[in-house]
Image 1 (cartoon, rainbow, N blue to C red):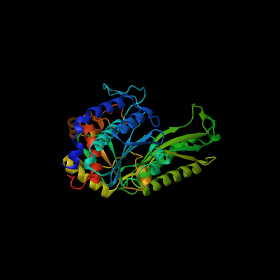
Image 2 (cartoon, rainbow, N blue to C red):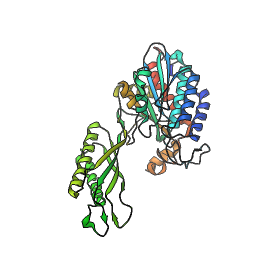
Image 3 (cartoon, rainbow, N blue to C red):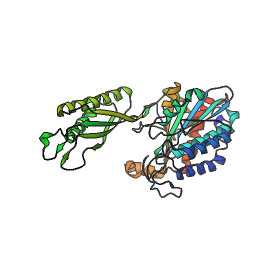
Image 4 (cartoon, helix red, strand yellow):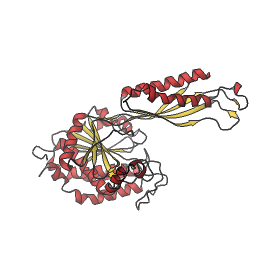
Length: 413
């Protein structure tokens, strides 16, 4: 019997409580840095499974299972929900007003707990150390750094490799991998530009920040179309422009909220520098009485998968699931803060995508060219991953990835 088969032999027997954990978490979502109930549930289960448990970063939880000599593998799941009112109508819908697991982190927690239990029960098949890390506040890009700042690299064994996964609007029963960028870097930027207030009937007495901000919005459209090399990925979105409160008052300032996504540090630096240059230039042109202000927030690092690690994990997935199940992942424009954890240790990682949509529904949407219209995406109030086989595959992917490094000699597929 292979190492995978040995450890996964008890999967069906464990799926009952994994499903119950998922529906419980879905009913009781907790927002970023408020994951107290989830954290307690995770810590209690890990302790029961035999893990040494450490609390880090406020509500973060790390379970360490040492099992002799060998590599150390870290697997991470994020725990926080979103400020979204659920509209799925599911019998296990959120019972918390204005909060919902609209991104699937309840899937991630439940699947990693299931994998942690199977790894603990199947210790005869592997050797080394398995680390199950449950991270808070991914949605605001703060949780991984909070755990690092709380001493993660000194309080937890240094892994040789790190893994994470994310449920996505793909067919359930599939998994997708890719080397290189899989999720974009993300930056949010608040820009305040200053004018000179005046009566609406006396524009000659003013420096109008509304006109200034409008000029900036138009000019920013050239950052991608004219300053980014064709073929390089970049998105610059102006999500809000706020100025003034009354029709006959020219305000003295305007605020713009921007969101930027890129797949490389070089493009990221180029885009951010272009934005600041354009804003400053437009302010000079308009005669703004003072310098603009730039405030960066909700910043996410690039999630770029290591080629060798991704190749090893992809081969393990293919051997276990079959080539028809393992897909090539197209880079996503969403962002994550997972990579700060392996980066803090200085170790390679891979991050894969897990399907969560009814396969027939998904294939019909693909055939009709209506995936975006017919399949609720992450952060939608209608986002509802299919419980089966999504949870089973989520557990299996973690186990298979871990055993591709930890399986004892002679226990590989």
